[in-house]
Length: 318
Image 1 (cartoon, rainbow, N blue to C red):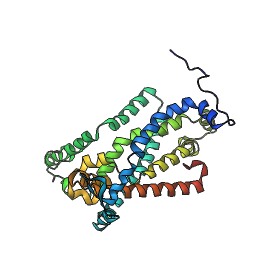
Image 2 (tube, helix red, strand yellow):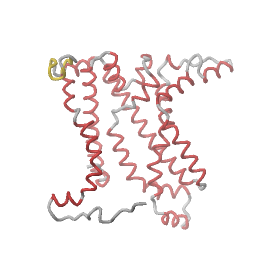
Image 3 (cartoon, rainbow, N blue to C red):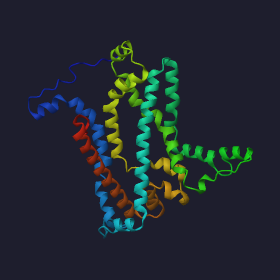
Image 4 (spheres, rainbow, N blue to C red):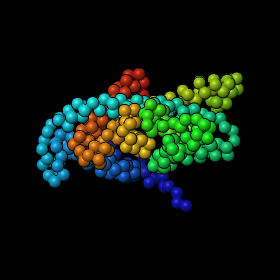
């Protein structure tokens, strides 16, 4: 088995020219090349496509030859009355996801840490991890087979108990709770990994010393584990809040699909963009909504980071 030569990467020095610093860091720079190529190809190269939001796009003429209409596409979406509903649903769902994801992930990570049997801990981690790797298409089918009005497992069970079946696909009120439950079932195990790793990184001597001093389980969690997790929680919350206007299209589409009865309660920006693009071929309106979504997300990242920088400068992103 090959070993790493310590002289492969030259030690970094504060002095010297920029050229010398780059040469000394050449291996680290090469490791960053795939990520740089990815961001250039998928984040920066498509930026000229933003112009579609300001034109009446004609695929025969192309983007830059299409008729320029200014802000009419934005005005159309705003006057349709859907923009507020889409934004509200997207943000409220993501707030619920962010808060419950982190709360349950921390709780699960602490519980896993407290499990003494390594075998049981590994089995538990595996069982909680499995839902994350299930395709969202399959998740949608599982939910449909469970909640279908005629042949769903839940309604078949209710009929056998001489109870009225639930017509869940004909009313939107229960669906926010259904979507949140499915999301948590699928993501909690995966989200707990980062917190579990952070907990395992806590110096065991500190925990042992607290136990010698008579600290019980709750005191250990409150005064040692949670304060140690604070930087991780803040950073993950910052990243999550940056995407608060970006919905989980795969989850929503596979659970709700083209059921307009449920749109008022669960329609999000991504679903509207998909319908406008694929069903109506209205690329300009879809691009306008997408640009609006990106601007709101950008403003939220700056706002949250500014607040964190004033409260805890060490935890800010920049």
